[in-house]
Figure 1 (tube, helix red, strand yellow):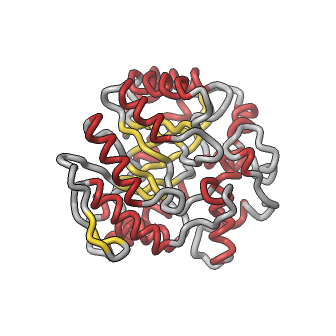
Figure 2: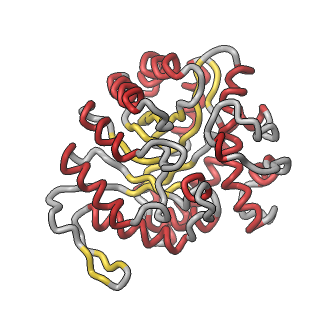
Figure 3: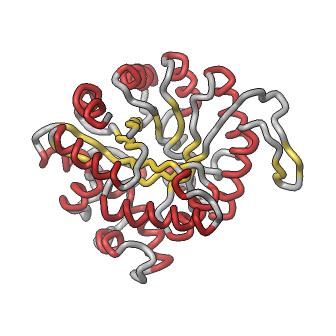
Length: 331
């Protein structure tokens, strides 16, 4: 199992670059970041600095969207990074949350997302594609290689992922829900005539290594609120019909709204409805042995990568604990 790390891009950007350098030295395979240009700094500028300061880690957004970034521009950006640094990028993409909602816009529709996956992948890999009535190709590309991984929760988005994506990003670490959603992606791939096992599976969630579980829960409760934004959209569409796991429907029953000014922040005041049980299920908490046990169980479900969100008050210790104790155990 690969281990990645996900950063918010708060200034100073040099701090993120240094953490990424330490992550590579500690055995992390991927460095991801939020892509929400109003709330945080510009990711692609920072990716270039990370790639220049490292030799092996793969970098990319978790996740970008085709609403705030034109697909042709995104493809050209990744191909440029690949030319500079040797095919060390991955494109995580979804319908959009904070990046579009802070502009007063809704998430992008699935037909637009499907088209963007194809356009970004084909162009960034040096191939031709038809887009908006034009036949396009980036003529300067020689050896660029890019995979596009889709983040999804709802039934139709999961189906799209199985049909077109190179990888699937699930932003929560609950074992039962992960099993359900991975199965949905693989079944969709099989129906589309694809090899279900060819789709890489990435589970992303906050991780905090230590013994004070009560404190860890308070530092990571924000994540249940972030996931709740997506689940609320799905519940509005499907209700409690069985189209999504009942546990997801049930946990947002007390949700009253969301303040994007506190998006992804420890201590977010609007997430009191997220119970301790949900925090424990969605996140990876406790001593190193508990992390190893949960990640081993995820690996047994077919998860290829765990990407830990590192947004809490003990980032350095958790990063070091993964490098020292957890990554070696999983290998």
